[in-house]
Length: 276
Image (cartoon, rainbow, N blue to C red; front, side, top):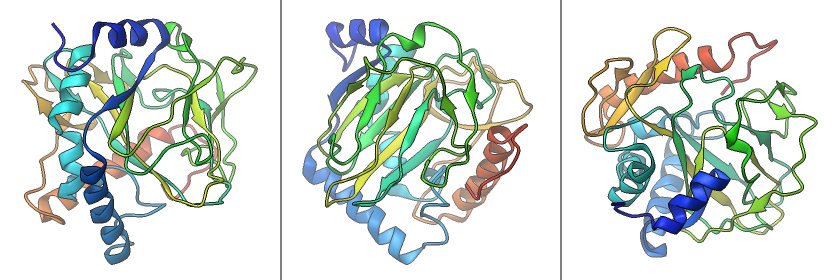
């Protein structure tokens, strides 16, 4: 029996490759985490910002709390099982009236993780609306393999390589609006993207990409992750610590290790490399 998701939500996820909105916390609690994030952005721009947006949960407690939030973990577990690892996290921040967008893509295009057993949690820390560039998903697009992507390195594309799926019908895409404290879950092969933020407010999302069973492995050599629940009986990943406090030295060091390795994996075979 599922802990968080309803049977209808599970059926929707199985059919469409995504489900949401899912209530995680109150708007007030989401506001507390947003305030902590924005304080960290102001105090430590070298550690958290547009070019330092990956795996910040190893260094900051308020993001670690999201990765391990009981409702988030339980909902992911309803789809993935009891034993869970988290591969990485990404902060997606779109400033108001800026051209940044996320092209149509699949999360596991360049990750090297096999098999594709994983679900990405996308948690809203600000209103995520059509006007502010909310996530949009193509129903049923998870049912097949990874589609060919073309690297664009478009300056306005938030993705690492500016990767985009070409010659694919996205007319059926469904926008999912979220209030602060809600999330979506989507399969790591689900085609999705988001438009620019044309609103007067920041659009702030935190993605755990992805929650996976420990049985998956990295096909491009060694890799890092974090044990979130249960046991890791496989040892396929170097597991990182939870920070005891913000800027915990052990967490900061592991984040640097993890981010460097992730960059090597995601840019493997690329014509060029960005700063993130």
